[in-house]
Structures are given as C-alpha cells and as structure tokens.
Image (tube, rainbow, N blue to C red):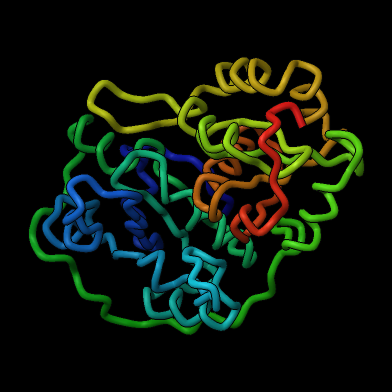
Length: 287
C-alpha cells in the first residue's frame, strides 16, 4: 500500500506496527554549542518507538572531510538493517527543528528505491504544540535487526559533480531543459553561486511558527512563493514537466528541503550530492 510522503504529527500511520520512526535531527551551528542532537533524543521527549538515525554516522566518509554525503549502497543497507528496517517497512522521519534534516534522510531512502517513506511536517516541535503524546523515558532498544538487501542507486534522483559542472557552463538558464536551483540562504547565494543557478532559498520557502519551528506551505502558497522567486514562467515550466530541477546547496541538506517542497507539488527533482563549492562559482546574482 502506498503511503503519503508528507504526514502530520497526528497521523494514524504513526501507530502502525509496520512503521519504523526515525529521529533524524542534525544541528547546524547549535546554540548553545554544547547542544547535541543524540543527547536530546535520549533525554526526550520523542515520538513513541522512535530510533535515532545518525546522519553523520550513516553518511559516506569523504576524503576531503565533507559531511552528510550519500552513503554507499552497502553502508545504507547496513544501517537500515540495524534499525530493523526492511524494503517493505514504512519509514517515518522527523527532526527537532520542524523541517530541516528529516528531508535529507527521506531523500536518501528514496534514492535507494525505498517505496514507503514519510516526513512529519513540523516534526517534533509541532507534535509538542499540538499535544501529541510523546515518550520521555529511555528509548526502546531495537529487539531484532533486519536484513536489508544492498540496493541500487536511482540515477534519476541524484547528479554528480561532472554533471553539475556541465550545467554550470551552459549559455542559458534552461539549456538542456534543466534548471539549477540553489537552496542556500540569499546571503550565501549572493556571495557566490554556481553559474546559471537560480535562488529558491529554503529559509523563506518554509513557514515559521511563532514558537520557532518550521513547517511546509500549502501547495497554492508554495506555488505563489516559487513564482515570486523564480518567475511565473519558470513555475509553469516546472509544473508542466518542460524542465527538470537539480537542487543544490552547500552540502546536500537544504537541497533536500527543496526536493521535499517540489515533491509536495507532485514534481520529481534531482539533488546534487556534493558540496557546491567544488563547482566554479560566480558572485553575479543574475547568472
């Protein structure tokens, strides 16, 4: 049975015996610096039956020290199995910021062909606000590890450095019927970005609750927002499938947020899984 990619913190799917719930929290520049996502998971609160999915541990080690790289098929299969996940498991992902790190984990499962994946919109803080019953005692131990077959990468979900380098050398923004979309904050984009890429910054693309957590816009609101940033013509091309999207950022995390945003509109897009600083950059915002 198919499952929705995006669910609310009150979804009955969370109570399914077949679901594995993953806390994929990851902190960028934690404030205070002593904050630790795993320690916060252990302390609680957390969703009942949740397990911690360590983004940095799962990620493939990079010779230049880059973090959050896509794991190899073997590494992914090993970590999935250790969390009791099989190819038929419904994987439900959330994080402690609302919508931040969870999309990266959801995308990783999708890259490896996992069919049943959902992201909790608003994550743990929205669940707290809405009065969802949460765990505060010690996390439950995984009783049975599973055997996850080594999967194959979905080539339609990810692009590499060589592909993005070719796109950066195009003479127009939509040559090859592809649009490069940069998810970083506008200040980062203006300081230097991949040539021919357009800005759809994740901070303004999400909504922010007064208590501080982020959550998704409605479909119509998101369309208006994208049209305001990329232009109505670009939005129409994206929705019609006349162009395809390649999401970029500084290291793969916020690009996955934009991936989720496009998915919420029924648009499949790809993600550049290497840091954009590897590509030639320009400081001219119109390129």
